Image 1 (tube, rainbow, N blue to C red):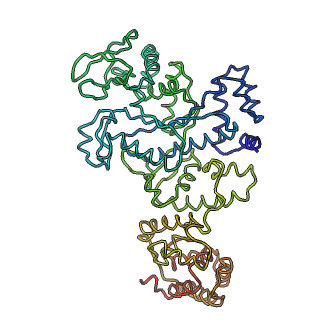
Image 2 (image 1 turned 90 degrees about the vertical axis):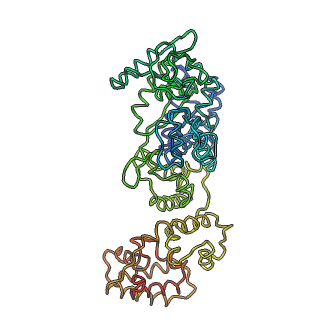
Image 3 (image 1 turned 45 degrees about the vertical axis):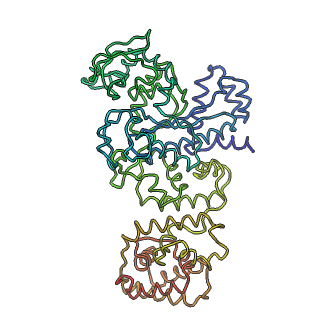
Length: 557
């Protein structure tokens, strides 16, 4: 069974498996002489990764995947997306290697950076203005809940990642610099200062080149992260000399957290010190990846494998910025949609720019449910490329929800429901054995639907009166549904009557008839499968709704 999974993983076409195969090739190239790579790859492809690890000791080191987070603003969707997508690659790599190869996922917080500007929408901005230029772990928390602004934002990120069950190691830039974890790499950079400068200076403007140094010393007096030239560098003592605006000529070690690196050299140093094998990044960082990779090689490291994903856009088509706060927060999404729907959204087309705002949540939720249903009947080769395989690490649930999210939204509106109990009452006849315990996802969806309807659907509803043709069709539909047995709960039977009425009254195309139903009865331009909706809402209630719509009373009210 395991070997069969590895075979499927080698042939899978979805992007996490493409990335996993790239990662495997990268690690073999990085760790083995060319003459030995073929043998190791053959063993792994044969489902014997354990033998490859036993045969080549250098392969036993964990494969390290990293994601980065800048806590100068609150965590946002892009942050979560990187962890979610990297986890999908990690799961694919495990399938590819039979889960024999140990892996690590590091969620790295760049919390030693200086606070350059006050993010919008943050309480107590005057406090942050007073702490500008200090490392984020030394900036006071404007929310008043943690020791620093970075600690607050890091805690928000970790709580969210933990709620999804991600398997990761959190790492703080401040802690790693201060602990000595980066000392050797920093001393190497000090020794190869000129080589790093030769890489970085051509990428800068003339004015910036005149003062640039990869080292950003922390002022012993003000605690500020200083953008100042390095006047002297002492390889023997491991120190640099600079001019501190608050205290004149100053000498500090480059180790122990006395300096922070500029972010591109810092990225490269981190790859080297932590032996990172994989890191993805946004399309806007392609040039940064290129320059950091050069610095990584100059430090004696090997740049990681990875790929560049497209950025998220807000409702106006603008790039989402954590400092502007113009995107959905993770809490926003989870007020209106399931965690699984968010993961589904992250899986889809990572190299295509996508809008990220409230109106994508219902579609993402229903698409996730549809993919769960499709998974049940797919052959193994199709299953492994289904998004839900990657979302659930190869073990998606057997059952999702008996109804769609869009149907629930319309049921909430038509029934004027304000709580789950009111919605469950409509399911008593349609699904007599269903309870919140037997249908937990449906129960959760009800809560999301109530929130979403109240905040986004209800304010935008616009009912219209039917024209003469539509009125006649609506009254005909009401009569046909009245002729059905009162206890009918078969959505397909009801849907058949809806189709028959549309055809009998000459609606061409037939979608014009369904458009009329939605606009007249539901106050929206589109809606759920009407037969299923009527089956849950109840025939008597549905007939009453249709007659009110036909007479224009819904539009009038």
